[in-house]
Amino acid sequence: MNIKNALKVQALEWTGVSLKVLDQRALPEQIMFDEYSDVTGVAEAIVSMRVRGAPAIGIAAAYGVVLSVMRHYSNSEGNWKNKVQNDIQKLAKSRPTAVNLFWALAKMQELLDQTTNNPIPVFKQAAIQIHADDIKANQIMGELGADLLGEQQAVMTHCNAGALATGGYGTALGVIRSAYKRGLNKIYAGETRPWLQGARLTVWELAQDNIPATLIADSAAAWLMKSGQLDWIIVGADRIAANGDVANKIGTYSLAVLAKQHAIKVMVVAPVSTIDFAIESGDDIKIEQRNQNELLAACYINDGSVVSAWNPVFDVTPASLITAIVTEKGVVLQPVENGVKHLQ
Ligand code: MRU
Image 1 (cartoon, rainbow, N blue to C red):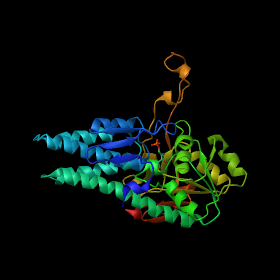
Image 2: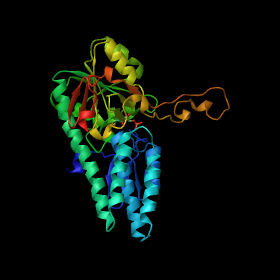
Image 3: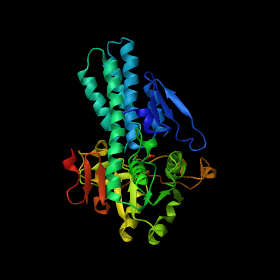
Image 4: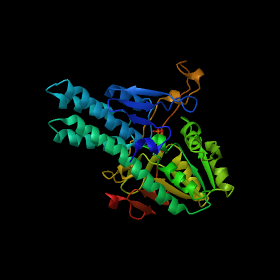
């Protein structure tokens, strides 16, 4: 898989000695890359959401571990493994909800436990493989999801589950890309308050491929559904529990509740690396709370006023509201019936 061909503008680029990260905070106004050659930088890029989206976070973390091995092993420090171990822990604290982060770090940890001599090429190869496998999984899911949609459908997506959020191609946007080639009728994107992943990233990313999308305010979703002009909601996921409950960007749960009221189907698209087989249900998923300043009007920040903001950035949609979970290992229809355990 040629990673460079998977996306015109890439979220992550491994140079062999450093990781280039497209600063998603600056999009769509500016296309700016930051280049990191140590773990502290990569962890900060995740915390600050220069890189975001569950699979992309996992891939960035894997490259972060490579940088750690390169630094500590090359310095011939006898205790290089302990230092890499500390760096893995640092990366694990960067964001709490996307399980792909912990999945990728567990893979790197396994290597750390096994590898003794000449570790740099081994770690490099592992991270490159995680990256390439993610793109491959997205392309498979794109076709499977498009099969499920059929032709002439109207879809709405939430947040950005595209090439920007993954190794390339995208999960929900991968399905939309594949379905567009087959005659998908209409694509709506919700703006995704407060960080505006939909308004800033999704419509921009689709425009890079000349795919037309119509942006709506999050608060217009119910009215769009009521109009009868929507067939499917298609979203990605940050963590899927064994019973099929799905954590994704805040607002996904409201869309799924509204979809039920209007008999609209809900598709979740995510690689198996997003499934947390260790947890039974969504009740066990830690929901990230971000700084209230992401929500507050600037005039309230640090003014000692009584105004505050509550800013959970994910929610959990119960399996009972989901029509299908699409993975690279196959499609699970009505996940509420048997969950997703069998995909392990
Ligand atoms: O806070 P973000 O922007 O990292 O949240 C991203 C999402 O919620 C995505 O929908 C999810 O990670 C899937 S990305 C393929």
